[in-house]
Length: 129
Image (cartoon, rainbow, N blue to C red; front, side):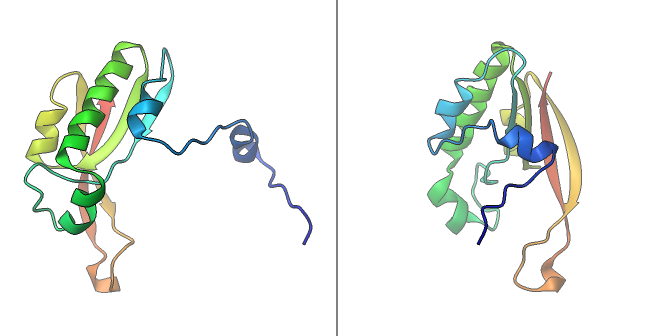
């Protein structure tokens, strides 16, 4: 099979990208003035009764949510722009209540065991101010 290289603006931008496999905090700590951070963590909430506890609590705990917020606050103070999605839940809104704009958004779930379980869900769009 021939070595095929995709073309287009996306492939040009990604051809200069560096990919790292490491803790999110290490990467966010490198962000500086005018960098853009997009974060989409697993949606663990404070009480962990969100239907995904077996999935989320093992890989991304509430303590990780706090570490993420702290890292994003530090990056924002260095001039980075932050865009994030998360659960639209009281505990998440409280976590990002200072220095961030919070906007509920609705999206269709495309992942479910049956098509009847795929429905609209409300998430939170969190943007640094």
